[in-house]
Amino acid sequence: MPYDRGDIIEVNLAMPPDGKVLNHPAVIISNNEVYDDDDCYIIIMLTSQEYEDKYTYRISDEMLLQKSNMPYIEARCHLLTYILKSHIVANKNRNKLKRHFVDALVEHMVNSVLY
Image (cartoon, rainbow, N blue to C red; front, side, top):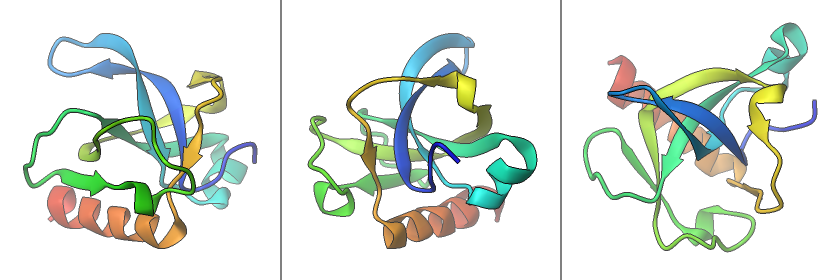
């Protein structure tokens, strides 16, 4: 599996409400079995805009393996999808969310989006 759970990647995403396709950072939340079985990753979109609503999961530098070059990061927990490896934009600014924060992000996503 080229990428792992917690990896922060860049991907082209169609953005609501107009469907305009933009490069956006995203975090992989799926495990290796998803990739092994279906050659795809489940991701949540990240943004540097502050929304502060129930879908917000704020990400600080302490949650990352490397300090971010963005002043503010939040996961938009309702903006999740699956992508193929070919959808990932190669760049040198990759980072990773620490494992227990990925778990907390997924828990927040479930509670804010699915319940």
